[in-house]
Every structure is written in C-alpha cells, then in structure tokens.
Image 1 (cartoon, rainbow over the protein chains, first blue to last red):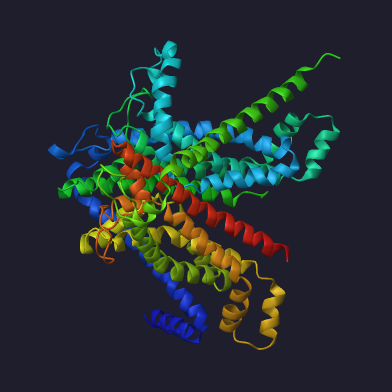
Image 2 (cartoon, each protein chain N blue to C red):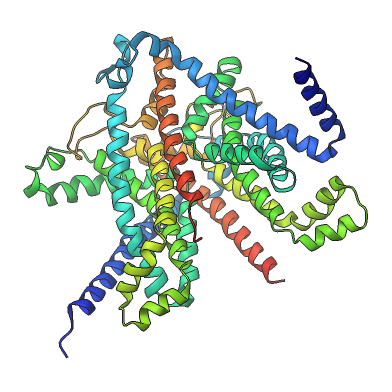
Length: 311
Length: 277
C-alpha cells in the first residue's frame, strides 16, 4: 500500500517537473490512446446484441435476411476472402515483374519518373476507380472475359452467366488498386540490394535474371513480403471500388462470374437502410470482424518488418 | 553460337517483366485518360457554382457537395492536426522505450484500419447523438488522418540535424523552446507538406461519409445538418440510370483527381527544391 502510494507520488512529481511541451504532447498522446480504446470499446458494445442472439452462428451462418432478422456473416467473409486472395496473387506476380522492369531493365533516367507515377496512382481516390470500374471493367467482364473463358466453363470457378457485376470485376479493380502498393515495396527492396553483391554474381558469369534469382530476391524477401501483406490489408478493407462493381448479392458461390458481396461493401450499402436494432448491431459486428481481420494482417506485416535487415 | 538455356531463361524473364509492367501501367493510363475525356465535357462554371437541378436541363452543378467537402475536411483537419502533430512531436522528441513502441504500434494499427470502420465508429459516437451530420463525417475523416499527420510530423522532426539542436541547447535555451522554435522551425515545410498530404488523402474518402453524412441535395447550413461531398456525389451519380448524372459524376471525378494530384505533385516538387538547398 505504502509502496503504491510512493509510486504515485513519484510519478506525480515527475509530471510536475516535466518539460511543459513534453507534458502537452504526452497529454495529446494519452488522448489518442483513449480515442482508440473508445473506438474498439464502442464497436464491441454495439455488436454485442447480435453475438448474444446468434453466438458463433453469426460467423458461420450462411443466410443474411434483414427482413426476417436472420444474420449470418459467412457470405461476406467468403466474398472478402476470395476477392482479396486472388487479387493479391495477381498483384504479387505483376509487382515482381514490374519492379524487375523498373530496377533492372528501364533506363536509369526513367526509373525515378516511373516510380513516382506508380506512387501517384496510389493517391487516386477509390471511388474514382469504382466509377471507372462500372463503365469499363463491368462491360469487359460481360462482353469479353465471359465469352473468352466459355470453353473453360466446366471449371467451377469460371461457370455461369454474368451481368458483369461480379466477383471477377471486383478482383480486377482490387488488383489494379493494390499492385502499385506492392510494386512500390518490392522495387524499394530490390533497389536496396548492395551493388557489390550483384557485381560479385555478375563477375561469376550470372545472367541478369540469375542475379535477381540468386542474390536480390532472397535478400529482399522479408521487406517485399511486408509490403505485400500491407497491400493485402488494403484489399481486405477496400470499400468503394468493390461495392460499385461486385454485384452486392449475399451468396456463397465458387464462380467468379457470379455477383458477390464483401464485409466492407455490405456495411456501406445497408447502414442507412437499417432500422432494427439487431440489423445495425449485425452490421457493426461485421465491422468488428473486418477490424479483427485487418488488425491480424497488419500485425503480421509489423512483425515481419521488424526483422527486415536490408532496407 | 546456339543460345543456351540460361540466356533463354533470362530473355523470357525480361519479356515477362515488360509484360507485367504494361499490365500495370496501361489500365492506370486508361483510368486517367477516361476520366479526362469523360470529365472535361461538364467541367464548367455551372458545375462548381450551382446546386443540382432537374434532369430536364443540364443537371446543374455540385456546389452543395463542394461546400459539404470543405466543411467535412475542415472538421477533419481541426481534429487531426493538433492530435497528430503533438503525438508526432512527442514520438520524435520525448518518447522513450516501451511507451514509444506502444504508441508507434497504435499509430500503425490506426493507419491500417479500413476507412469504412472509422465511419462505423463515428456512427456509434456521433450519429447516435447528433444524427447524420457534417460533424460525424468530419470526425470519421479526422480519425483516418491522425496517423498520417503523426507519422509525417515525426519523420520531419527526425530529420533535424543534431548539430542544430545542440547549438540551441548550448545557448542554455529551455528544451521546449528548442523543440518548438528551432526543431519545428527547421522542419516547418516538411511538417506542412505532411498536413497537405493528409488532406489529399481524406478529401477523396467516400466510404466513411456514406454512413455518416447522409448525402442529399441541400447545401449544409451548419455542422449538425446532413451534408453531401464530392466523392459521395460521384458514387451516387455513377449508380443512377441517367446519362446527365453520369456526366456530372465523371466531371466531379476529374475535379477531385485534379485536387488530389495537384496537392501531391506540389508537395513533391516543393520538397525536392528544398532538398537541393
């Protein structure tokens, strides 16, 4: 008891003796922590009614019917999972190629310019990408990709008719949005490889690709991976571009040509129409799932980033 | 000499890299070009000076959304600038050990949260009290901007050379004066650049506004009334079945893109000039 009191008194003395600016900025930092706690607390609080009523069934339930007050989140979890996963696979393949092009093939004078073009693209608001998606990607899926993959429609992923508004359209739009992010990270990582190491490999007679494969790629794996995970996090939480092209239908289907729905998209769409307490609670609970998902993704990225040696 | 398998592999990867780069860059160029071509038609004075009109005419402008965006972004900056600035300053100048690590992690977490979630948060603390309003939207955008402001401020202050600080201390100036007048003074342009980039980041945010400010066609009279915003108008008009509204959506997109790119390019150009001297 006495020692606790002593500790408090010592802490108070420390605060009193503190530099005034340190005190002020510490005060703001504490406010930020309180805001974040309030953030998490209020979301959990509002989501409680639906978790109380449905329990684990809320997460694994496949039916979402606000009119009957039945709420199952699985269609949205599935839609978020399939779109973000396929998009990140495409993004990784493209960004390694594009980063290799910028760092190794493009003339050095152009390198700076190309990098800043790619970084500027990231700044374009997602609603603009969505607008473009409605008028160009949706027709592309309907009039070009569907006929193109018709011979392959025995594959479950490529079966069925399409209006264009589909998981496929969402994947294309997401890929375009996150590829510049991962490319930027992979490019920075590749640029950080010490020239001596590369020259040593060249001196042994390695080709440009072999230097990349044997020296640059293994050395930069962690740094690139952290960037890729961050890009994946963006794909998971992206709202506008997806809600505008994905078709907004809560079903769990394998075919990418079918419409789907994602966690972020359904929150954006149904929040204003939601009138029952349970419906609002269910939407906020979807937010909690999305929050936890992106938290896990970011934690992973931070952990990997910490161990990055070259950067 | 017959080309070896190794050099063929090399050539193949070069071809793949060029292909990948084109796959990345061509759609992006297409986005920019289509926004310019579709948007230039209605990027006129009426667009930015008049509120929406009936579909029979030209469809009017988006003045209500421009006022709404100005309001919402102003509120967001009012929240995020002091908070982000002082947290960044604390991290750069005072924070030590575990607490600093905790604070940085918290900022990373905040930066990684999907923007729609910030809207949900604003709903639970502002909308349920004051209703759908510019204030709720500004609050959500403010939350989104905080980590950007904090990080850029910390980086800017971290770039101040030790010699300059030491010069201040050696004169016997108190710590808070050294930080506030010497460090902040030195890093001023980079700190302001960080503010501007945060502004450019939130001005195009749509998702959190969708569930906090309600939209509508009225020019908001105060921060407690429902408002609309430029990105929200793009969304609403893009989903409408009317061609006149589609055109306005494209023009609003062009306007928004110009604002965002001008801020980004301006900051880059400005900082690069500064870096030489």
